[in-house]
Image 1: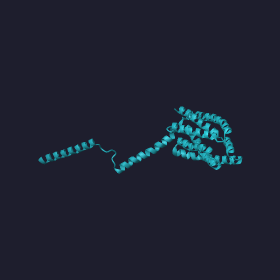
Image 2 (image 1 turned 180 degrees about the horizontal axis):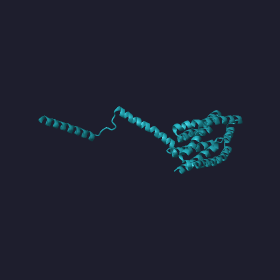
Image 3 (image 1 turned 90 degrees about the vertical axis):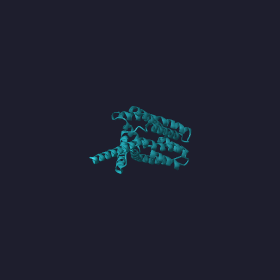
Image 4 (image 1 turned 30 degrees about the vertical axis):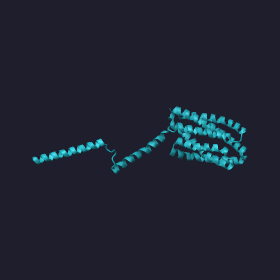
Length: 247
């Protein structure tokens, strides 16, 4: 089962990397120059701050993953960044374009540390080196193909078709990842969920006992049987009392 998961993740990661190859920095800088005549100096400044936001997002991703889980962090931070890519070609103001690029940079790479952690968590220790290789090599191959296609698209039109292709492929990756692996939880998340449930159950049971509430309400048959037993006991006591008086 672990091997099947690894090969499936490798295929999904390849889709993501193939989409990412359409928007490598060189192609993105070329598109910004074609569409907005953005200078090289300003493009370099934009990419500098994008890199800073990406670095900070690595640290934030850890806290989000501890709260919501690895798969949820991978999907629900990556999906908005892919939507930003889809919106950028339809934006005609350079200020809005840069804002969307910054927002994408703050979100798009949160799946990098969580992705590595997730792969290592769902496979046995002995298989982790092979799993890391299997999930990394296809990504590199896939990302090498798409810049060639991006260059062809940019030469045909300055609309921004590479960004559309990248955003669409990444959204497909996010949806498939969530559908296939939302129930495949790492052992650490399973233990954390069990630890949260057990104290809640114990506290609930203790609260019922302290309040004197019955665990289960007796049914009609049980109540009738209890009344019959009480009546029989009363009759027995009365018979014994009469015998004692006669004697």
